[in-house]
Length: 212
Ligand SMILES: C[S@@+](CC[C@H](N)C(=O)[O-])C[C@H]1O[C@@H](n2cnc3c(N)ncnc32)[C@H](O)[C@@H]1O
Image 1 (cartoon, rainbow, N blue to C red):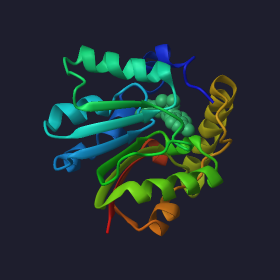
Image 2 (cartoon, rainbow, N blue to C red):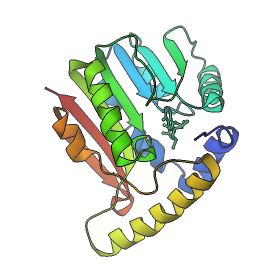
Image 3 (cartoon, rainbow, N blue to C red):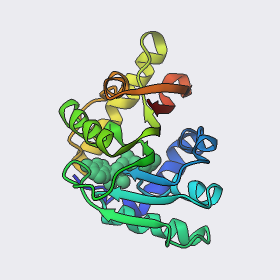
C-alpha cells in the first residue's frame, strides 16, 4: 500500500472533487484542541490539519506518522507555504500498524480520512495500540466517510464509496475494500463520543471523542 503516486496531485485532486468539504470536517473541532500539548497525527497526508493546528495552538508538540514519503514531503511543503517552521513537529515515516511508538501520553490524536484505509482486523489492532499511548483524558478528532442507515442518502453514499474504494485499491493497493465503522470499536476502547457533525447527506462525518 502506498499513497506516493497520488501525493503530488492529492491536494489538487481534493480541490477538484470535493472543494472545501473535507477541510470543513477536518477543522470542525479545531477549537477543542486548544489545550493539547502533545499531539499524534496519524495518516496526516498533505498536512491540512497540521497547519491550522500549529497556527492556532502555539504550545503543542506534534508527531506525524504516515506510511507515504511523498505525503510527508507534501506535509513539509504545506508548513513552508504557511510560514511555519518544523521544530515542533516530528515526522515519522512508518506503517502505523507496524510502528512501535517510543512515547505515550498523547493528549490529542487525530485521524482524518485515515481509519477508512483499514480492514476490520487491522482497525481493531490499530485502535488497541493507540489506546495504550493515549493520555487518560485524551481527545480524538476524526474525519471520515460514513454510510447513512437508509433511504436515498444511503444509496448515494454506497455508490460513491464503492467507486472510491475501487479507485484507491487500484492506485494505492489499499487493503480495505469497504468502510468499517469505528464507532463501537472506539467505545470498546474506553472513548466516548462528545460531538458528531455530518455533512453531504451523511456521507461525511466529523467527530470529537474523549477518553475517560
Ligand atoms: C486518504 S489519505 C488521507 C490524508 C489526510 N489525512 C487527509 O485528511 O486527506 C490516507 C493517508 O494515510 C496514510 N496511510 C494509509 N495507510 C497507512 C498506514 N497503514 N500507516 C501509516 N499511514 C498510512 C497515507 O499515506 C495517506 O497519507
